[in-house]
Image (tube, rainbow, N blue to C red; front, top):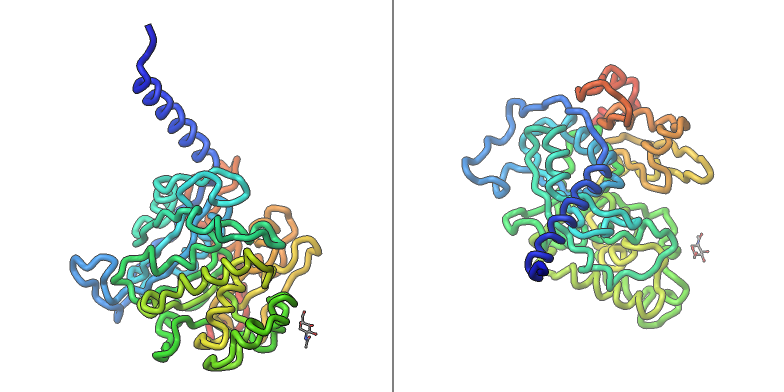
Amino acid sequence: MGANPAMWAAGLVVVVMAAMMVGAEAALPRFAEAPEYRNGEGCPAAVEGAGVCDPGLVHIAMTLDAHYLRGSMAAIYSLLKHASCPDSIFFHFLAADDDGAGGEGAAAPGIEELRSVLAASFPSLRFEIYPFRADAVTSLISASVRAALEAPLNYARNYLADLLPKCVPRAIYLDSDVLAVDDVRRLWETRLPAAAVVAAPEYCHANFSRYFTETFWSDPQLGDRVFAGRRRAPCYFNTGVMVIDLRRWRVGNYRRRIEVWMEMQKEKRIYELGSLPPFLLVFAGEVEAVDHRWNQHGLGGDNVLGSCRPLHKGPVSLMHWSGKGKPWDRLDAGKPCPLDHTWKSYDLYIAEGDSSSASAPSLTALSSSALPAAAFSW
Ligand SMILES: *[C@@H]1O[C@H](CO)[C@@H](O)[C@H](O)[C@H]1NC(C)=O
């Protein structure tokens, strides 16, 4: 007497699901509960029943995956801590929803698990998690120099306008390796002239040519011709901090414009570096420039060389550990850079084997002296 195929199938599903749950559970670290922050006076009153469509909200979009979760948790904490109206921030998280899509072959944690980790550390956080299907981009991705840059989730920012509710007019996209040390509402209130879809700090002294190959620059149909007629001369900008007008993005079908360049890249190598160049191709010379204080980037430096980068000159509202090195890795290795100590004061991670109960980390290290002097000047 044999079990019928339906029974076999049902049994298999149960086993697979159990295996996935156990596997994912082991993959996610533990985090302490962050201190509670509440709206002060003068914050926009919540519109009853409006939910995510409430016009008083500041919308932040980030990706969530097991690999960078510790960074994301610190970033969220920093945004809440420095916000004048923390209850008015709504977080939109994009998470890979299929195995391996988080990159590096690791099974992606379940969305429900990510949800419970967030809720445990930030009990009153307003957020939504959107499953991001990696197969939307895998066929468009070509091999690049740094394999980590090719994780499909890196391309999730291209799809914000498709994934977020239509009533969300704009979103601030942030990488997982950032810390806000200022009220993000100031960035949110960036004015976008009618012609601009994206606002970001620009770096016009950076050598723009080097983001594209000789093949690109020497092609008469490409090269300079691509950037002719833009609002301004094309400059490098970092896609880790962007204010995006989602309505204009949808109307202009910018996702498609980016994909066209990704398709070309598969035919002839026009750039080297992953998800950034298609953004530059579409938006360089068109972005609205934001004060550099909102992306003090490059703090990751280069892990291999063990280099530490200092802050750039000028005030600081957002620190960004872009580059190969991450502060959590250097701290764990006992070789932190000086600025990694600032990051540490927002770290909610509970090290394995640490038996202390989940509680807010000590904030005594977060005196103003722990931060660059300019951090809070405005
Ligand atoms: C900029 O980069 C390109 C390509 O790598 C190089 O040929 C050029 O000399 C550089 N220009 C400057 C001013 O460094």
